[in-house]
Length: 236
Image (tube, rainbow, N blue to C red):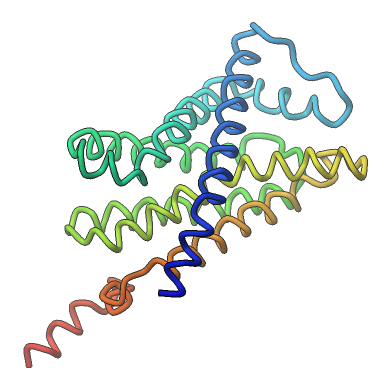
C-alpha cells in the first residue's frame, strides 16, 4: 500500500518531466529539419554551430534519423495511456507497431552516424553513442519478442526501457545547455560526458520505475533465457 502511495505521488512529476522532454525532442527535430532544407540558418554561435554542420554533411541519413524521431516522440506517450490502451485497442496496436519501427530506424541510424559523422564531443561521445544505440536496439528487440509471445507484462518493461532511453537525447541537450549557461563550457568539451550522464540517468530511472510497478508474477519470469528450462523442470 505504501509503495502504491509513493507511485501515485511520483507519477504526476514523471508525466510533467516526460512531456517536457517530448516537447524538447520535438522542437529539436523540427529545427533540425528546417536547417536541413535550408529554411532556417545554422547556429553560428561558437561551439553550437558544430551541431548543424555535423548533421548537414550527412543529409540523407540525418533525415532518416530525425523523421522517425518525431514519430517516436509523438507516439511514445500514447503507448502508456491506459484510456487509449483499453478504449482504442486497434489504435494502440497500430501506433505501437509504428513506434517500434521508428525505434529500430532511430537505433540503426544512430549507430551508423556514430561512425560516419564527426562527433562533436570526440571519442567520448562516439563510444557513448555506439553503446547506447546497441542497448536501445536490444530493448526494442526484447519488447517485440515478448509482445509476439503474448507476454504483455514483460513487453511493458522493455518498452518502458526503450522509450526512456530514446527520450534521453532531450536530457542530453538540456544538460549541455545548462552547463554552458552556468559554467560556459562549450558543447564540444562536454557533450560526450553529457551523453553518458543523460542516457545512464534515463536507464536508471526506467529500472527504478519498473521495479516499483512490477507485479510479483512478472518477477518470476523476468528473463526469457531460462524459461524453457523452468518449464521442463516443472513438467518432470
